[in-house]
Length: 295
Ligand code: GUN
Image (cartoon, rainbow, N blue to C red; front, side, top):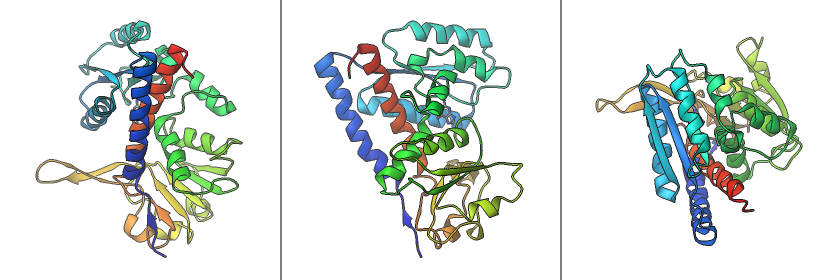
């Protein structure tokens, strides 16, 4: 079997047109322009690329954006003061602090300082709690993007064996929680594997839907995948640079070998990545609607 390639780029493009229309309507009917503030501390090149893509997406669909790039030595108190200012700014409906911050900054303290009504990343404990108990709220962008990718590709999750490899707070834990919910586009039997799992392959081979967020290039080999499985690769690993200095990226999955066994697979780049940004836009619009009391 050769897998169908699930294009996150194509699906994200479709959703971009939907959110563009949403923004236009919010402006014309309600006089509300959604606003997103991005905060980046330090000069991690990958984080820089991601924040630039987020700001560009705002510009493209008509969301007001404010970019705060701070030097790596910024004291935590200065960062907290900026968040406090953004919390009070009525033009700003969403606040995103790019992760990871430099080591002297306590990320949890920073996330907790964001007003939960502006937590478009879905990382605040209030958002995490709502997600776990299945209450409406902001869902983290990449995990929610995976759910939408599955829905729009016609892949059934109800009753499916989903195996998630990786247990980070940004990807592994939330994607497992989202797909576990008793809800449409979820209701799966979810297993989470991690660095202390005794035999990862034993679990991954049972998966109808295998989701990987490990950060190790080509960790998932063909012998770890069941014939006909759906494989969603969230890994973004830089394996080198082109002579022009462009990053060469690969996922957690040995794509060429696994695509001969899977029924559907996401590429890296162009899989889960583009979905992250479009969900961030959608969360920002939702925050603006909530602030304006618009349904
Ligand atoms: N770093 C990697 N992914 C993300 C994300 O979705 N949001 C933020 N804020 N930082 C990240």
